[in-house]
View 1: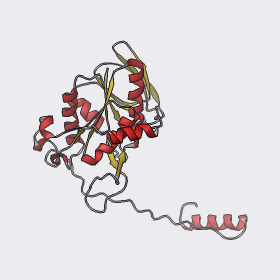
View 2: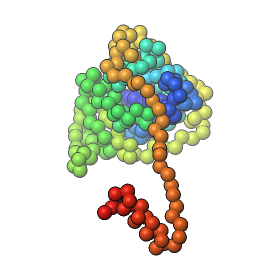
View 3: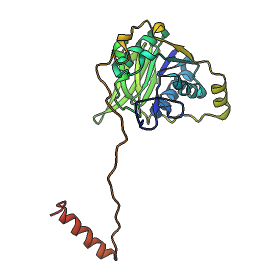
View 4: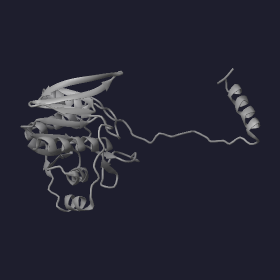
Length: 256
C-alpha cells in the first residue's frame, strides 16, 4: 500500500516585508502531525510505504526531515522559483502533478488547514484535480478489503463513508495523538538527508500554470494583528469593586 501525506512548512511569524521562508522562520505545520501519525498507523496495519510530499523553497526540507524522523519512508519536495507566489489553486496544481508522478498510490492524506493561511482548500482542490473521492475532517478509520470506512462529524451529525482506493482524506487534528520522536530518529533523519527535489520540468508544468501567473488570487500583505485590550484592576473591597463594574457597564451601554 502506498500512502502519500501532503505536508507544509509554515511561517512561525509574520514577515516584516515579503514572505521569505527560511529554516529559522518556519516549522512543520502542526495540523500535519496527526496526518503523519494516521499514515504511519495505517502502514502498521496494512503494510506498505509512506511518502511525505511538500511544495516550497529548500528550507522546507526540514519539515520533510521531521516527517522522516517520525517514520516516513520517502520525502519529496517540489521546489522551483516559478512556484513562488502560488495561491491554493496553483499549489494544488503543482501537488496534483507531483502526485501523478508518484503514482500508483492508494491514499492521499492532508491536514484540514495550515497555521499560516488557514484556507482548508488545498486538499479538496488537489483531490478534484486528481479525480479521486475525498472525505474531509475524518476522525475515525476502519479498514476494509478494498478500501476504508471513515467517520466525521458535521453539523451535529456523525457521517460514515465507504471509499475504494485510490482516495483522499483530510484528517481532523484531534483524531490521533502524534507519536514522540526520539533523538536517534531526529539525528538520523537530519544527518542523512535524502529528500528528492523536483523542479517544474520534473512536474511537466509550465510557468503560467503556477506561481503568480497561475494564481487567480494574490496575497497583498501579511502583518501581525494588533491587540488593543487594556487590563484594569478595581480598587476597594468586593462590594465596591462590584459597584464600580456595574457603573462602568452601565455607562458603556452594555447593561441597562
